[in-house]
Length: 82
Figure 1 (spheres, rainbow, N blue to C red):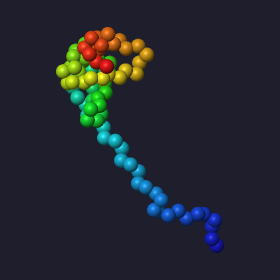
Figure 2: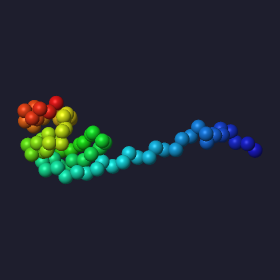
Figure 3: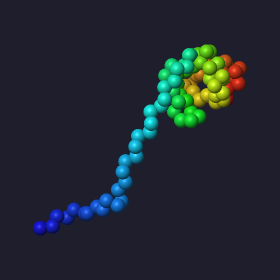
Figure 4: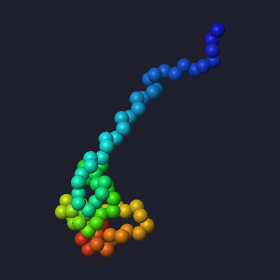
């Protein structure tokens, strides 16, 4: 007796992609949970004044904040961040 199930060839299936590597945690005074995500991409909590100055010394140029209000906006602009 044959059952009416389709036969699926393995050639159409691909292996699952490996998960992306974890972000490399870095110690920066003034920024909690700071880490390198990619060569030129970092992430972390809202920076304090010391954190902003550390980012400036590290030649970071652009900051992205996902909050409605950015508590450090004025200081960031004064330091030349975009």
